[in-house]
Length: 288
Image 1 (cartoon, rainbow, N blue to C red):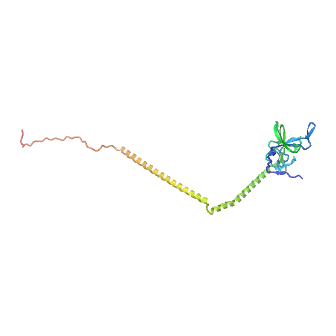
Image 2: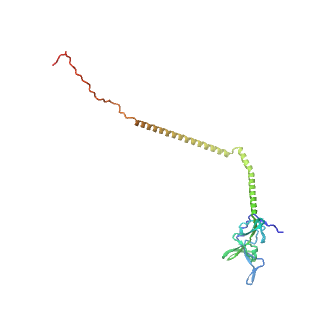
Image 3: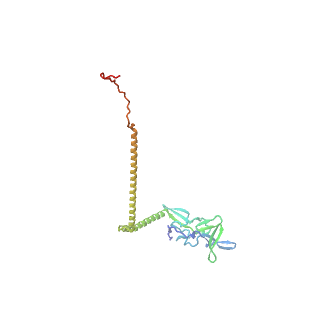
């Protein structure tokens, strides 16, 4: 009986060295390489150590038919290749996750290609550092420059669109429940705070009220003083304006009246009185 595939719905994060360090691994599947008359197990370069516990999610297998469903790529990996399969009315995506910069292996001529589903080939000679073991099993680090292909384990996943829709709905429901629970737990704190406030004001509150009242009184005094000064200034300006207006009116009135001479002697034209002749009395003595 075949076991059902394991789900991988949370992001697995491998150790940082798993995506950086190169290891030289000896092939153990019976294929030998030779130089002259000497033969030895063909080595190959692999990203990450041969131990997979820190580099790959629990349940991962070198079996090429193994996969996670539903599954998502680990952190530092991407879908390097994928295909879709129709299952009734559903569409299933089948993908291979490779480390960033690596691609899906399409060749089959070397035995490790069946387990290392991802590859990277540097087309120009570049220096690189790798770790290997000596005859005593001790690790040795070496640096070389070469045109080389690197291999890496891949993670096979399968999923349907409804798998992630269900997961998102569940996540939203959990978040809503947690938020509601958090609100209900914080309610007693709010009630306690309200109750303590009704028992009386704290010393700090009383001091704050006193300071506020003092500042308010000072502001009122200042406003009253400003209003008084403004009114005094307004009255002064109004009085000056009225005096100026009266003076102008008096001057205009004077200009509109006819001029008269000062009082003095009245000059009249002389009138000649009539002169009547006087007769001497007839009886009076004559004088010669």
